[in-house]
Image (cartoon, rainbow, N blue to C red; front, top):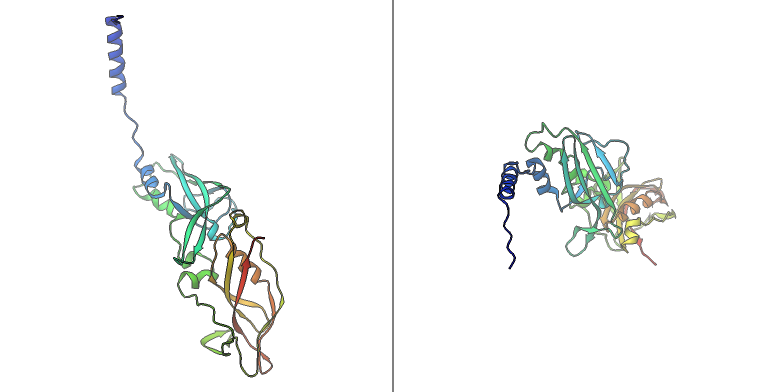
Length: 283
């Protein structure tokens, strides 16, 4: 049997090495970094401003550096995979995600994109002198876990506030909508009635599919409530039924370009409220 007997010098040397290593301080995670990781790591949050760029920088006030391109809020979800903090910046890395409307729960849910768009988001700030919670507050100027009506474009306000009405059935009686006016005139409900002629579509532009929705095979119908003014121009557009994935944004974009022969009552043009459906189908 072979036996190894170390020399006394080897034992002393090993002991000294152990004592030296034991005396070295163990690196502790930065409490501020830990706080940011607890709040954001492995979570889906919205990028405020709904910027579509994959490399974004913000200053210490949360304002974007440069001229990033805004897009639809439903394509501004960011799944944070890594949070890194150094003396002069906070850096978030992850993937872009989308919001898609679930008709059963009547809520939007987060869905990862098929092509896994990587996103890096950097906040330039002196992190050394920041008070506890200050960096978290700074990050909240750039990222948020929840959107309210004030955060989104005006055509989403009724939807977010729960005021979006359901489309009325065809053949409903024509009449004035109580308490609603447009440019000083009463707004009429399009329907059937003596002396009333409904608006007629003259020109229509088709919406474009968002690339993210196409690659994820998203289909559906966006329903928009709007007023056709006395000149036949769509006004006061509001999303009534949503899809997500940037498609509702494309539907609004297209509907704003539509033109109508205005509705008339006893031969006089009148503003009228209607609902339109914009379909997205892949063939």
